[in-house]
Image (cartoon, rainbow, N blue to C red):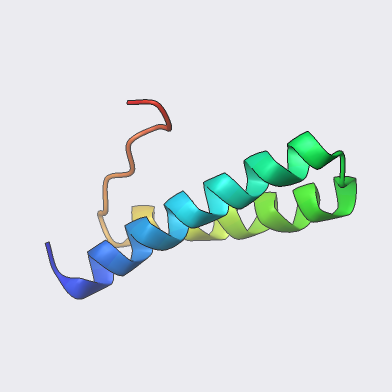
Length: 57
């Protein structure tokens, strides 16, 4: 795995974690921010052929 792929996957996992915490805290603004970031990261992964496994897999 190259550095780009590893870094991208790490950012996705961190953002998923941040999104979960935002949901648990009830911070709707932060949920929106984290969800948008996650959507962008997943789009970037798809554009570069990086497979992202769903959380819990």
